[in-house]
Amino acid sequence: MTDDVLHVKGRVLVGPDDVRDELWVVGGRISYERPPGARDTTAVSGWVLPGLVDAHCHVGLDAHGPVDAGTAERQALTDRDAGTLLIRDAGSPSDTRWIDDRDDLPKIIRAGRHIARTRRYIRNYAHEIEPADLVEYVGREARRGDGWVKLVGDWIDRDAGDLTACWPRAEVEAAIAEAHRLGARVTAHCFAEDSLRDLVEAGIDCIEHATGLTEDTIPLFAERGVAIVPTLVNIATFPKLAAGGDAKFPRWSAHMRRLHERRYDTVRSAWDAGIPVYVGTDAGGSLPHGLVADEVGELVRAGIPPLDALSATAWAAREWLGRPGLTEGAPADLVVYATDPRADVRALAQPLRVVVNGTVRA
Figure 1 (cartoon, rainbow, N blue to C red):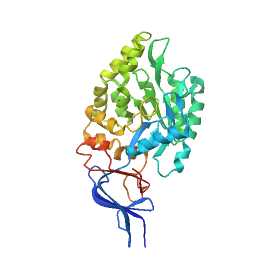
Figure 2: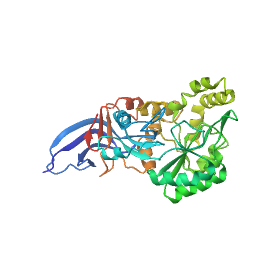
Figure 3: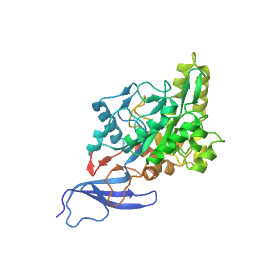
Figure 4: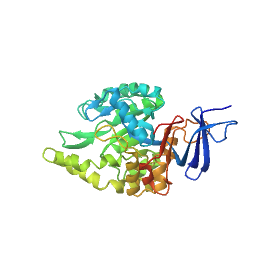
């Protein structure tokens, strides 16, 4: 006899158009066949999605740098309770490998520690190096991470008084080639326009924020299949940041305001061109965790169709990151809602149940 079976009933959204009536969880894994002799110890019902994805999140980091394990745990729990069960950690100075041993916390795909130019990023976040060392550090973080490396592609140059690219083209090409040789993909923080062409032509796999996309670079991204993670809930902070720089860096402030003003047009133009777009919140720096529903809503405001915005945190996002959804034998990481999130993505803000590794956790 099989005991301790979780029975999930209602409308199971295996894919956007693949809807089933029920599934069972046995030993923490999904089955679409009722186990012979099973006794349901728990049953939940509603509209079921695979655990949501936050493809740009920072566990173990706050506005000042690395945090203690207790704070990192609270960050991960906040994301979990919001339905985020798969995180691509886009750079953290903290060692969060202990989370892998917890069956009640989200699964994390790490990009190692940020790699930035000396004095060209937020203090205490990154390895701050010069171009001659870029290949070495990319190799180091490719080995340390879970198949991703994170560069800081641009940042304010205090001498120029504005955002400028951080890395020469030759060094970027060599570094990305080294990451690919080691089996890792590369992404980069980019707010402005200047660094994008070099990074994409050098073979980068993804760009974070991507507010600097223009009609000249959007076709290049589309041709190369380079994904973007817009983090619109973070871009919403640009006016406040700009106000703080008006006196000392007026060019930078004006630039940040322009990037903010056209943010929705930028994302919609990218989507219309066929650029893959995924959900990321940039939580863990100055932003709180648990904002995945807000970011999906922002993508819809930008003009992305609701079903596609939903897929950007569910089915398509998991496929992009190489992790299973609600498939036979997969770990039972799922979220249950009272209403159909395909009809109204605002449903994501109110999960009824969150199931992690087959156990109802929230």
